[in-house]
Length: 223
Ligand SMILES: Cc1cc2nc3c(=O)[nH]c(=O)nc-3n(C[C@H](O)[C@H](O)[C@H](O)COP(=O)(O)O)c2cc1C
Image 1: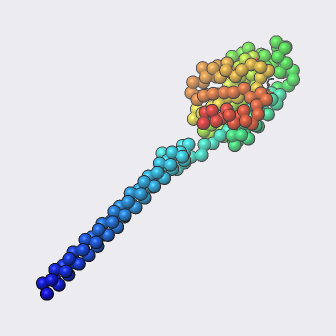
Image 2 (image 1 turned 180 degrees about the vertical axis):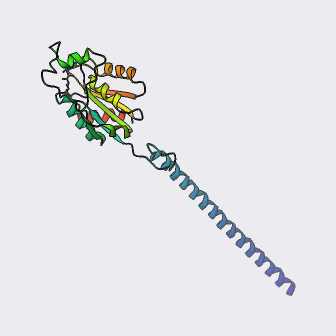
Image 3 (image 1 turned 45 degrees about the vertical axis):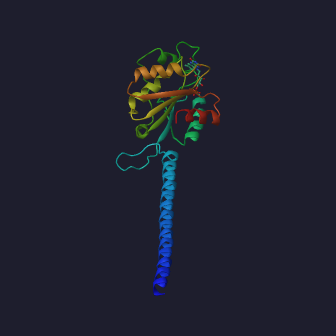
């Protein structure tokens, strides 16, 4: 009898051990799945984070994201380019600087039908550098500069050369903008690129009658 009882007990114990063993195994497997599952989730989150929030610029020393400083700098004889500059500054959240001539241009100075008007004389003289009355040295601190002017005889007025030669903007990415009676900005850009190879002039746009969406579209095209 004793023999039969020990055999039955042995069977029960073995069954119990097998059952307990398999449930332990299941729980380990469950944990494994959980861990792998979590890893998959966190991997996905990491990838999403790194591709979706790419910083514009990272400081090499601190590893911090750097906010670019943007300036709109312009010269305007009769107000058209000023209007474009104000709109551009609003759209780009930029600080705005006006290039103010020491001798403000009068209507007679700008009468291009008169061969001897001051503006025509300056444009006929490669060495003319009309003086600027205000201090614009702060512009050297900016990462992006939008530089604007009216087109005079197909190119930029000489006072733009005075500006570029007076201040160091070699550290900035420079975009030109202009207003004109119809001429494009392209000639003035290539003229200035040839003259000032140390200045990083990358693009430009004529902004006559430009709307806010026009300006946004332009900015987004190079961001
Ligand atoms: C001396 C002078 C030359 C000009 N030459 C041109 C030209 O070559 N092509 C053109 O389309 N407009 C020309 N214009 C017109 C101006 O570019 C245009 O009126 C511009 O919008 C003026 O901008 P502002 O009001 O900011 O001075 C000239 C104007 C002046 C005063």
